[in-house]
Image 1 (cartoon, rainbow over the protein chains, first blue to last red):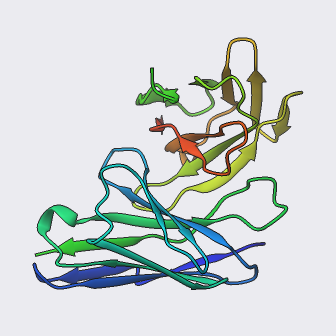
Image 2: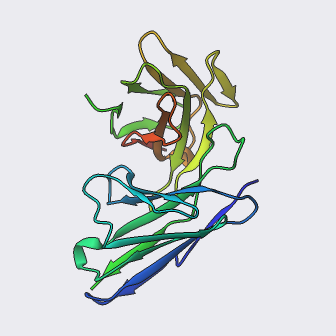
Length: 116
Length: 110
């Protein structure tokens, strides 16, 4: 079946540094990928829609200069958390849907970010 | 009213019990509906799609009630391994961006 791979699965970084998270669709092309954030015991919150070859669409309240999204190819989207702060510590998940899958969503394994 | 609402629970049931969750949605033009399962500290995984006519997969039954704008998930003969959070996912009509419920927590105990 379709697989979406996310890397790294866990990362600890110092406050003020930047962290890049990769999301790859392994056996299908994805013109659109989604990035979510999930705090403990809370629902998935859509951060942005990543569009191949164009700018990402950010949800209200999400700082585009802080959460940089690049979708340079049909199989890879990256999320960079810039100048990370402890409050950015969260579970970040990407997702993608193969064309013709009837809106079936496949998630990456998620990335646990801890900012110390 | 939130676009997609779920009772967060937790639903605490014994092994072998039957349990049902509902999920209400506000957009009457919504077209696609899914149930996902999310284990603690893991990514959500597709449990089943929800079809207009209802569908069953083993111990799991999903139904759609368009008139009342809700979907349901019924789990029969609960297993310990069914303990997880169950997320309702709705695609509003004409949109490719899914809306997630906050999830319903199920705890199955011996």
